[in-house]
Length: 436
Image (cartoon, rainbow, N blue to C red):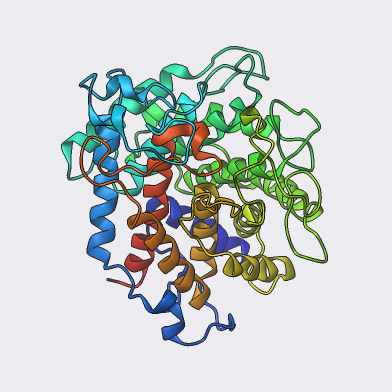
């Protein structure tokens, strides 16, 4: 993908449109083979792909669940969404047991800014802003979330905090995720709504914080120029800056797009530095490591598979947004590794560890959507089936997903539902890129 094409794709992905000259094989024009050359191979286990109408209905059901669990002040809570459920004895309080510490889907405290941003992104992906969209309650949900997020932004002269969405949290060093997600959400909303009077200033302040906080020449971790890097935080920051650069190219954000180049170059340098030359696996903090674990669980027998190339998916997407293209050795190896570990809704089963990991699915889906070709078709069929066949049906939980994955129990049911909808949106965008 050339630099110009990447800029155009940044806008296209933000707007949910095809901006890269979509072809029948995917949104990136290419003739390279993926090793999966026949349409029949895009059908997993002989099952037919899920109809587009069913996928769209699934997305709307997930958004309806989010509407029902939005707090009156506009935010969603990772740990206290039940208080917005209505009836104290409602079905959300009596779900059938799931493979999670709390079957109702209550997550950890401290991530309200992050899950609110994810939820807002889910509505934006469905072409709803605070100004536009067919469904009034979706527009209102975005409006309320926007106002709440803007009220969380820190102002002042301190460069380590000015522009942050949500003040740094004591006892929760992962607060930087909140800011990355909120920055992406506000930048996407700015592009879609073109509401410069209300959003351009907060978006610029947030983006400037991201650019200042990066370790010079590398990536990000928890905090402000800490000198430490990790692939997960760096991946979310790249997504935030990709949306911001799209806003810059649309002339709704007053940051020259050239100012983003050092940030993307540093991120790609980090991704390459932690990718094993032998296996092609990208690590979290060192080449090919297994990635982070939820140490807060305090479990001797960790229930989640560490064989999934989650950070490889993050790096693959980061490579695309940082200027790499198909044909790049690390890009090709990463796509191959993702193809060997397709999404599968498999909770912990005896000695078999859980393979449910919606973070992996989201980054993998977005990266392979760009990659295109038959490899995308196979992945797309796999991830849509995993999500739709395990979406809650009936009762107050209708439309949500149980947060039983490795990171789902942190963000709770709001996280799992919002990121599930975002993942399914990529299928709809691909279909639109083909003119369907």
